[in-house]
Amino acid sequence: MAFCLVRIDLAIVDVNQNKRPLKMRVSKDQIYSRACSIPRVRFEDQELTSFGGIVVFQKLFAQLNLKERLRRCCAHIADKNLYHPAVIVQLLIVHLLLGFRKLRDLEFYEDDPLIKRVLGLKMLPDVSTISRMLVEFDDRAIEAHQDLNREVRVTMSGGLDSDGQRLLQR
Image 1: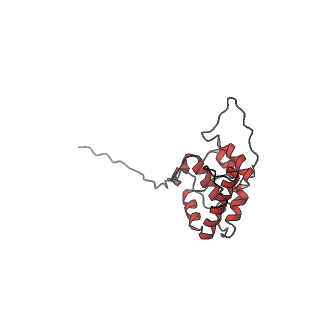
Image 2: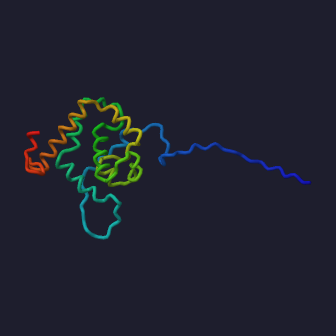
């Protein structure tokens, strides 16, 4: 009877479930982008991402001065994180515009360059970062965002609701 001696070497490997490279520290320069210009839309054969239509909303956000208005709503919240609370709110607006409802669906567009461009970011926040930031929103911030929502609705509708009533009276 012959015996065979087999040697097996085991290695412990850290598996990254988030598909992102493991990083310890990130600076604001690695997150925020200075690209604010709106790309020109031309109808020709191009390689577009699935979310190419979001550039239309980039123009709307600029006309509404949405980024600055969101910053004013969040001005009293401590800016101790890399992502400003207004950026998180704008990300949630874009998330809903893209048709997603769950925060985990962020993985479907986290590498999309047009989404990053619209938000002015080089890197989107992780779902856990968004969740932690949402906890910091107090009643004052929520009320300010509700007021902003009403203002934008009035601006967009010319002051009239779908049934013709004045929105300012509400």
